[in-house]
Image (cartoon, rainbow, N blue to C red):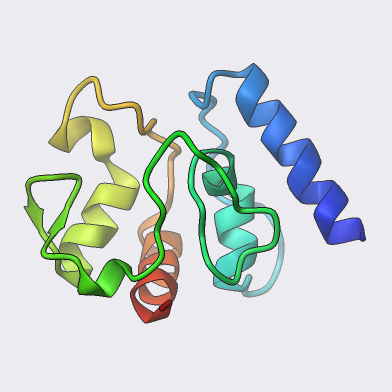
Amino acid sequence: MKLLFTVFISAIVMFCSGCSQNIGPLQVAGSQSAPDLIIHYGCPTCHMIPAVPGAAGKVGPSLSNLAQRSYLAGTLQNSPDNLVLWIQHPQRIHPGTAMPEMNVTVEDAREIATFLQAQK
């Protein structure tokens, strides 16, 4: 119940900020799970993500079966390195895209990318 409440509050904050708040790196001691990182960076606000509680956003595409796709963001060849790059710097790749820069660290982007590539 507490996790659902956290997801709900995160979604409200992201919605009210227009999904453009630069949250920055997670400032919690210890290693965080990919679903925790995904929630921290606000991804559920815009995306449906399997295995992430409350991730039922309708703004961006569903991230289910991501490994099965040929392209990311319409033009990037789907590879682990390109997914990390997209997670970190969507505005550098496609200026003006709805996906905001969220100051995702390279370590967090790798963790999230690995998780997303493994989801069916």
